[in-house]
Length: 141
Ligand SMILES: [Zn+2]
Ligand SMILES: [Zn+2]
Image (cartoon, rainbow, N blue to C red):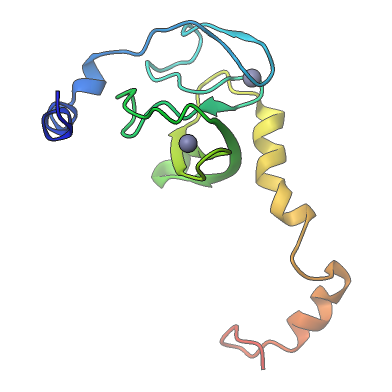
């Protein structure tokens, strides 16, 4: 099946009706991951360490032959307040966004969300000084 046909199937909602129900052993933390408890049919990452594998090009298509470990590098908030995880492939650097599952490790999610705040790209003790030199339009004078 060529890429063009594949895309057509997925556009018609293939993935919505074909659940991904594989049990797998997490290559990063060794946990056996079962599809139950995810609260969705789209389990694609480990609920314990939140890592994933680079096996898809489009979600669920298993079309990538990279196979690298997808590291959770960030979280972002979707419309309606739902959290999603940004995964980055350690091998090829591609970025994917994935919905969080109901049983994802909440502490791990929080620690990913907090990380940029814990490691700011400027000295944290200068924050007062930086705030003081900002104009009312938010720009640094
Ligand atoms: Zn894991
Ligand atoms: Zn990759």
